[in-house]
Amino acid sequence: MIRFITAEQTLQLRSLVLQNGLEPAKCSFDHDLYPSTFHMGYYEGENLVCILTCMQENHGKLPKSAYRLRGMATAPEGRRKGYAAQLLLAAMEHLRSQLHIDYLWFNARVIAFPFYEALGFEYMSDEFDIPGIGPHREMFKML
Image (cartoon, rainbow, N blue to C red; front, side, top):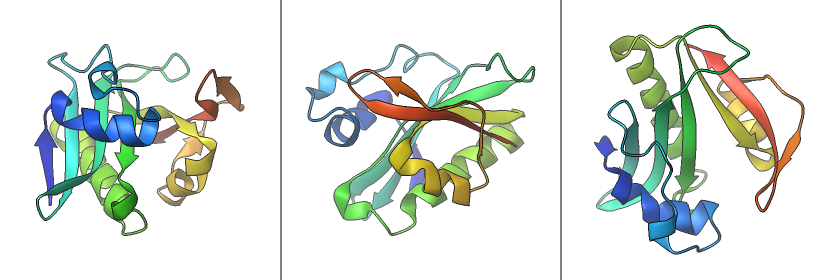
């Protein structure tokens, strides 16, 4: 089941999957509590197994209204079940139909390139390194 969640509910999975076990309280983003930011989660029964955050932020390369995907993470027990794709598609539908946003963009980790490519995202940068996290590329999709 997919539903909107709070920023606080994202912290445990961000810690586990994205921040190498960093204390969950230190896994928040600057924009987490902005009124335009939203968080969504995929539940397998009672367990939150996949999360994402979308923040209103335009990208300089495209002159239209945009949101940025941040902190997408899937718990190990929820991987390879299609949950992340379903969650991301639900977020994109919300952005398109409810918020009337033109595109979604983000910094993708190299390991996730095939996932995002399969959902129709395109590259908009060369590979670059985020210190302490690793190589990434900017990706986007018009909605």
